[in-house]
Image 1 (cartoon, rainbow, N blue to C red):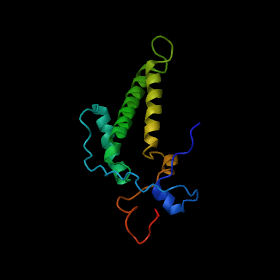
Image 2: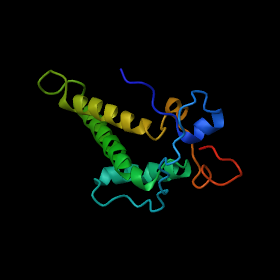
Image 3: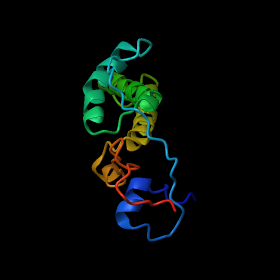
Image 4: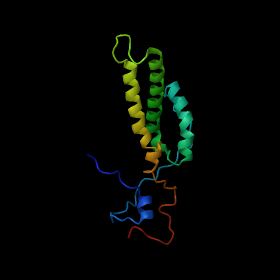
Length: 149
Protein backbone atom coordinates (compact mmCIF):
# COMPACT_ATOMS: atom_id res chain seq x y z
CA UNK A 1 0.00 0.00 0.00
CA UNK A 2 1.43 3.37 -0.98
CA UNK A 3 1.59 6.29 1.41
CA UNK A 4 0.06 9.70 0.94
CA UNK A 5 1.13 11.89 -1.93
CA UNK A 6 3.65 14.56 -0.93
CA UNK A 7 2.15 17.87 0.15
CA UNK A 8 3.03 20.76 -2.19
CA UNK A 9 5.53 23.21 -0.74
CA UNK A 10 3.09 26.10 -0.96
CA UNK A 11 0.61 24.20 1.19
CA UNK A 12 3.32 23.31 3.70
CA UNK A 13 4.20 26.98 4.05
CA UNK A 14 0.56 27.99 4.52
CA UNK A 15 -0.23 25.28 7.06
CA UNK A 16 2.97 25.82 9.02
CA UNK A 17 4.66 22.53 8.09
CA UNK A 18 3.44 20.61 11.16
CA UNK A 19 5.54 17.55 10.25
CA UNK A 20 8.72 19.66 10.32
CA UNK A 21 9.96 17.95 7.16
CA UNK A 22 12.43 19.83 5.00
CA UNK A 23 10.96 22.40 2.61
CA UNK A 24 11.89 21.83 -1.02
CA UNK A 25 13.37 25.14 -2.15
CA UNK A 26 13.90 23.73 -5.63
CA UNK A 27 10.39 22.46 -6.34
CA UNK A 28 9.67 22.76 -10.08
CA UNK A 29 7.49 25.67 -11.09
CA UNK A 30 6.75 24.86 -14.74
CA UNK A 31 5.57 27.49 -17.14
CA UNK A 32 1.82 27.60 -17.79
CA UNK A 33 0.67 26.33 -21.17
CA UNK A 34 -0.45 29.30 -23.25
CA UNK A 35 -0.85 27.65 -26.67
CA UNK A 36 -3.99 25.57 -26.23
CA UNK A 37 -4.02 24.25 -29.80
CA UNK A 38 -4.55 20.47 -29.67
CA UNK A 39 -1.47 18.47 -30.66
CA UNK A 40 -1.65 17.32 -34.29
CA UNK A 41 -1.23 13.62 -33.57
CA UNK A 42 -4.31 13.40 -31.34
CA UNK A 43 -7.24 11.60 -32.88
CA UNK A 44 -10.02 13.87 -34.13
CA UNK A 45 -12.27 12.88 -31.23
CA UNK A 46 -9.47 13.50 -28.72
CA UNK A 47 -8.97 16.98 -30.22
CA UNK A 48 -12.62 17.70 -29.49
CA UNK A 49 -12.09 16.66 -25.86
CA UNK A 50 -8.91 18.78 -25.69
CA UNK A 51 -10.87 21.82 -26.86
CA UNK A 52 -13.55 21.11 -24.24
CA UNK A 53 -11.21 20.94 -21.24
CA UNK A 54 -7.80 22.56 -21.92
CA UNK A 55 -8.98 26.14 -21.39
CA UNK A 56 -10.76 25.20 -18.18
CA UNK A 57 -7.62 23.54 -16.82
CA UNK A 58 -5.55 26.56 -17.83
CA UNK A 59 -8.05 28.89 -16.14
CA UNK A 60 -7.78 26.75 -12.98
CA UNK A 61 -3.97 27.20 -13.17
CA UNK A 62 -3.23 23.48 -13.28
CA UNK A 63 -2.12 23.13 -16.91
CA UNK A 64 1.57 23.71 -17.59
CA UNK A 65 3.83 22.87 -20.50
CA UNK A 66 5.06 19.69 -18.86
CA UNK A 67 1.48 18.47 -18.32
CA UNK A 68 0.73 18.15 -22.05
CA UNK A 69 1.47 14.39 -22.27
CA UNK A 70 -0.86 13.68 -19.32
CA UNK A 71 -3.59 15.82 -20.87
CA UNK A 72 -3.15 13.97 -24.17
CA UNK A 73 -3.77 10.69 -22.33
CA UNK A 74 -6.85 12.14 -20.66
CA UNK A 75 -8.23 13.27 -24.02
CA UNK A 76 -7.59 9.97 -25.80
CA UNK A 77 -9.09 8.01 -22.89
CA UNK A 78 -12.22 10.15 -22.84
CA UNK A 79 -12.53 9.93 -26.63
CA UNK A 80 -12.20 6.13 -26.47
CA UNK A 81 -14.76 5.99 -23.67
CA UNK A 82 -17.24 8.05 -25.70
CA UNK A 83 -16.76 5.82 -28.75
CA UNK A 84 -17.26 2.70 -26.65
CA UNK A 85 -20.45 4.12 -25.11
CA UNK A 86 -21.89 4.68 -28.60
CA UNK A 87 -20.89 1.17 -29.72
CA UNK A 88 -22.45 -0.35 -26.60
CA UNK A 89 -25.69 1.55 -27.19
CA UNK A 90 -25.77 0.15 -30.71
CA UNK A 91 -24.79 -3.44 -29.86
CA UNK A 92 -26.28 -3.78 -26.40
CA UNK A 93 -24.45 -5.07 -23.34
CA UNK A 94 -24.07 -8.51 -24.84
CA UNK A 95 -22.40 -8.83 -28.19
CA UNK A 96 -23.45 -11.15 -31.01
CA UNK A 97 -21.90 -14.13 -29.22
CA UNK A 98 -24.11 -13.72 -26.16
CA UNK A 99 -21.16 -12.85 -23.97
CA UNK A 100 -20.05 -9.47 -22.71
CA UNK A 101 -19.39 -7.15 -25.62
CA UNK A 102 -15.75 -6.26 -26.31
CA UNK A 103 -16.90 -2.65 -26.38
CA UNK A 104 -18.13 -2.99 -22.77
CA UNK A 105 -14.59 -4.02 -21.83
CA UNK A 106 -13.10 -1.13 -23.81
CA UNK A 107 -15.56 1.25 -22.16
CA UNK A 108 -14.60 0.03 -18.69
CA UNK A 109 -10.86 0.23 -19.36
CA UNK A 110 -11.09 3.70 -20.93
CA UNK A 111 -13.17 4.90 -17.98
CA UNK A 112 -10.55 3.70 -15.50
CA UNK A 113 -7.70 5.23 -17.52
CA UNK A 114 -9.50 8.56 -17.84
CA UNK A 115 -10.38 8.69 -14.15
CA UNK A 116 -6.82 7.95 -13.06
CA UNK A 117 -5.37 10.66 -15.30
CA UNK A 118 -8.12 13.17 -14.51
CA UNK A 119 -7.36 12.86 -10.80
CA UNK A 120 -3.95 14.39 -11.45
CA UNK A 121 -5.62 17.57 -12.69
CA UNK A 122 -8.19 17.74 -9.87
CA UNK A 123 -11.02 16.98 -12.28
CA UNK A 124 -13.49 15.77 -9.66
CA UNK A 125 -14.78 17.39 -6.47
CA UNK A 126 -12.85 14.93 -4.29
CA UNK A 127 -9.64 15.31 -6.32
CA UNK A 128 -9.81 19.11 -6.04
CA UNK A 129 -9.53 18.87 -2.27
CA UNK A 130 -6.00 17.51 -2.78
CA UNK A 131 -4.87 20.23 -5.20
CA UNK A 132 -3.03 23.33 -3.98
CA UNK A 133 -2.48 26.11 -6.49
CA UNK A 134 0.96 27.65 -6.40
CA UNK A 135 0.84 31.00 -8.24
CA UNK A 136 3.97 31.32 -10.32
CA UNK A 137 6.54 33.72 -8.99
CA UNK A 138 4.92 34.08 -5.55
CA UNK A 139 6.17 31.07 -3.59
CA UNK A 140 9.84 31.97 -3.43
CA UNK A 141 9.64 35.73 -3.78
CA UNK A 142 11.68 37.84 -1.39
CA UNK A 143 9.14 39.18 1.09
CA UNK A 144 11.49 39.59 4.01
CA UNK A 145 11.00 35.97 5.12
CA UNK A 146 13.46 33.18 4.55
CA UNK A 147 11.78 29.78 4.94
CA UNK A 148 14.88 27.80 4.01
CA UNK A 149 17.43 28.68 6.69
